[in-house]
Image 1: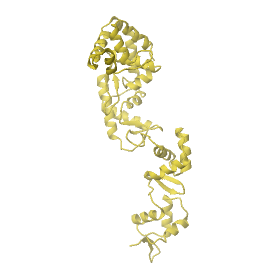
Image 2: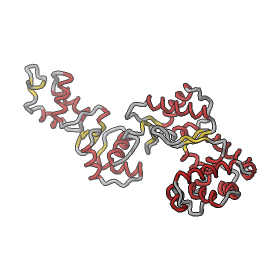
Image 3: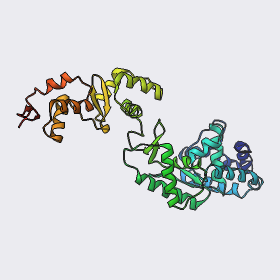
Image 4: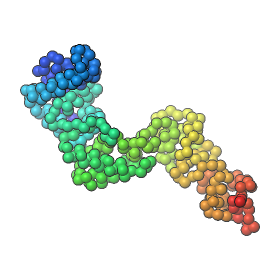
Length: 340
């Protein structure tokens, strides 16, 4: 996307600096062949001076670069870089800019140096809500961050939303902040600025702290698998689907153990699991019968069988056997109720 070489540009900008200033900037930004970035303390120890003195040299050297003839000579390069950032959205996380515009790891360091030195670009450091980011338009940056904050507040803690629907929701929050008529491809990049909003491997968005977004273990992958399937699955099929959907090798026995431990899942038949959020209640068949009778009152055998089979994949005879438990009594009208 860039019409110039960031590495060549930084070489030109550093050429006119005194040796120590050039070395400090090279080490701080990782502009050497190795691409290694060094701390203020490490550089200070090498020169036998304090980290604060190194910081002063760094700041003075950046000012010197901005005032140099080489900086003015690169006027077209600065405009090209500005145009590239604007084309990507105008306000972007540092990671996004480097991923989009740098060809390799070494070039990332040179590009970051140019963003730091260029007077057109302003940065905001990482905080609790947002990643490190860069912008050209201060007002736009404020509006995008305000829209991201209000978007986060509008999301239910564990709700997942498909990307297309989520982008439409974000667009409405942007409009409320006065941001209109922006390229559609800028919105996904703006979402990446937030540390509190995230996207799971299936392309669904939600709060970053939700286990449905921040996927950590087999249980979370199993949840997404069942969610995508939409109906109960045998644990062996869950394991196979995890591998197919996420390219993650998962042993069926491990999957079964994880499903048992997590109250998001309900065993509804022999090895069959459903999501609790679908309305399935945990417990064995007699617990299901008990819950139904508590909610609906006395019911006939046929009515109980019909309702239990909405929640469990079991035979009619299994339900009938469980009705013989002393938890239940058969009334004179033939209906069953809870024993007192």
